[in-house]
Every structure is written in C-alpha cells, then in structure tokens.
Image (cartoon, rainbow, N blue to C red; front, side, top):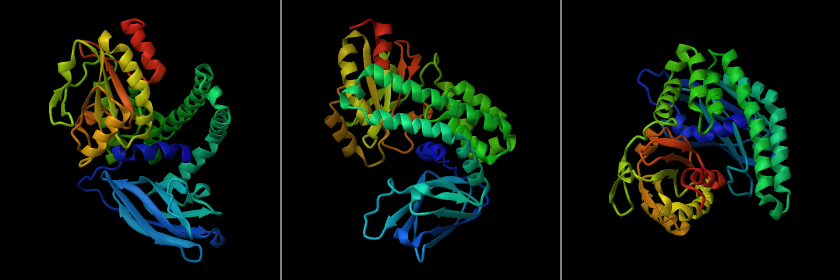
Length: 380
C-alpha cells in the first residue's frame, strides 16, 4: 500500500476529485486504536479535495481517536501522529491510506509507519496488492540501503550509480507490470483507477497508459477521477514525441511577456520547476553546467515556474540563489496554464524542442541531457 500511495500523494494536487454537480457526499468514519504506551497525543488527517489542502486533527484518549466526514469521491490521505513532548513532524510519522465511504479502522502497535487501514474496499484491495508486491519493495529498499552505505567516492562513481539505477528500474518495471495485470483483471474496481495512476507514475508513457485506461469499465471512466485521467491522457497525446509543442505566453519576474514560439531556431528545453521543489533545485547545478556548455551551439532553456500565487519573491530568490541565467517565466497561478497544456503532473519535468518547435525528447536530466545534446549538436 505504501508504495502505491507514496506516488498518489505526489499526484494529489493534480488528480484529486473535481467538484462535479450531482456528486453525492460519501460519509466516512476513521477510528483508530493505538497502544496507549506509545505516547501519541494527537492525530492529524491530511488530504487534498478540489485542489484544496485539508488538515483535520483529533485528540487521542486512552489510545483511541476518531474522524467523521463526507467526500464526493475517495481520496488518498495521510495520517500523522504527534507524540507527547515532541514537535509535530508529519513526514516522519505518516501513514497513507484511502479515505472513502464506510468505517475505516486504523491499527498500529506504536507508529504511523506500521499502521494498517482496514474495513473498506479500497484499503482492502490496496493491502492485498501491497502484500504481493512486498518482495519487490524489499529488494528496492535493500538496494537503496546498499547504495547509501557506500563511501561518498563510490556513490559519486557514475558507472556504479548507473548500475544501481538500472537495478531499481528493473524492479520498478516488474511493479508496473503487476499493476497493469491487476487493472486488466479488475476493470470495474475503483481501486483500478488508483492502480492506473501508479502505473503511469509522474510521467506516464502515453500509449500504454491510454491502452490500460480504455480497459476500465465505462462507469469508472465517467467518474470524476476517471474523467481527470482522460484529460491527462489527452494532454499527454498533445505533447508526445514528434508533436508540435503547444505555444503559450507567460511573464518574466519583471513582467515582460515571453511567447514560446519566439524561441524557435534553437533547441529549447522547457523546464518546469518551482522554488519549493527540492528535486528541481538539486538538478539545477547540472542544468547550469549543461547550459554553459551548449548555449553558444544553438541551445537554450526556458524555465517555467509552478510557484504559487503571491510567491514571486520566493521565485526570484531561487533564481538568484541557483544562478539560473536563462529566461524564466510563470503565471503565478494554480494551476499553471502551461503545465496544464503539457499534462505536467509532477516536477521536475522537461521537454526538449527542436528548432522547428517539435518535441524530440522529454525528462532529460544530468548525463542523459548532455548525451542527447551531444547527439543533436555535436560534442563540445
């Protein structure tokens, strides 16, 4: 369950149920039974609905807590615990589960990480699939631990890092195949909607993603989440390899409008990022080096920030702190219109355009971006 929900929680802002006329609220109850000796004083419930973040809390008394409410559709959610005398650290003590109609029971011996949600269909199906996938998850965890235990010099060795990534990718492929098999075997299950989201991940391969979507029962495809997935597929098809990149206009921090098509004549990397995105900021030094290497050979970057309304100062500070010399634009709205047009579900994400404005590659980072530019523009 946690492998699936870790992905879904990343996708929450994009795939949470849309407010749809006629949706009947579905009542839920979440009851928890904790070990009183664990010292949990308060429990927090977090989810996103209609692209709005919702945080509720409940006091723990004699090891018990309860939440009640109603939702138009099931959503992935997080429970996090606060311990007596300790600060609130939601990411350290968080339990993912599905918040849906019915009575949900949360049990754990001592921590959110060991919590299990039972009593409703989505949680039951998620738990069962998680059990079957646990050997693959354990192998991935072991590989990551092995990598983390290596000396810094070993971890920085590109060949060793690439071999580790290949081992993890092979296991991830097996997981995706398991989700595909589940969807095909359960086309009418609500859980298959969420399994499809996990199968696609942050950057779905559109052809296989669309094929699996079509195997879902029509009633699922017509549901709010199903419709959102259909819209995502349509957006992905508009930005498939070989497609003419959708044009857009957004503004620099100084307020100057920039149109994407004005940059034709060069290879352009559209880089979707944000000041609050840790992985984006970690990748920026690599992109700065690649830009310096190829900027005089017909290559440029257009940064598109997904910073939120009112976050102009944070955006500008991040540009300066990371030393980003290329054009930066945003509409500082949620959702960002360019991100919507390109089907961007998570960041970092990028699209490489040829001089005619056609998409030639996506999600190139580090050495893979350098290799692609060397192929297109010659080694520098």
